[in-house]
Amino acid sequence: MKETIDAATSAEQNLQDAIALLPKEMTPDRDLWSGIDKAINQKSVVESKGANNKFFIPTAWAASVVAAVLLTWVTLGPELPGSKPAINLVAVMQQNFQQQKQSMLVNFGTPDIKQLPVAMQTELVKLSSAQKTISKALADDPNNSDLLNLLRWTQQQELDLLKQLYSPQWQQI
Image (tube, rainbow, N blue to C red; front, side, top):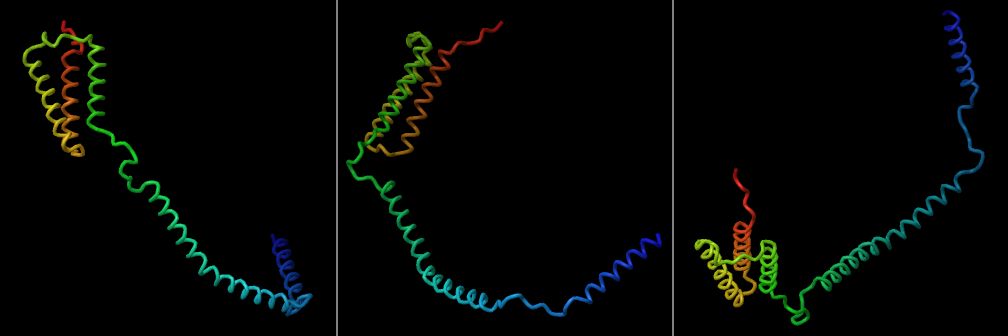
């Protein structure tokens, strides 16, 4: 153990001797002032170019924003009257309802409505009458969302009633 301590102290002593032999100051092999001067001058040239960028970058951003706004306005802007034919939403809803009703009746075998109970017949007549009345009101005000929702609701009620009437019932044992 004493040998390791002696070896460590001798290594420490050798290191201290080597440090003492080193010179107190180091001088570079060549003159570095010319490189420092070039770096300082080059930095001032870059700063003068940066002054041009201070004007160019905000201008480029502004031009980009203006271009994006114009492109959006042109593609999504207001429609010119007569540019597209008006879609009659009520007619589309009625056509869709008739197709759903027809496919449902075909699936159920197109039963005779006169054989249904009187209460169900009156419900179907009331729903059909309500749909006609709502359709007439929508002819005067085609963009009324409340009437459109009411029409959709009455159509759905009629489809639900037909589904309830003609869907196969589970047999009870």
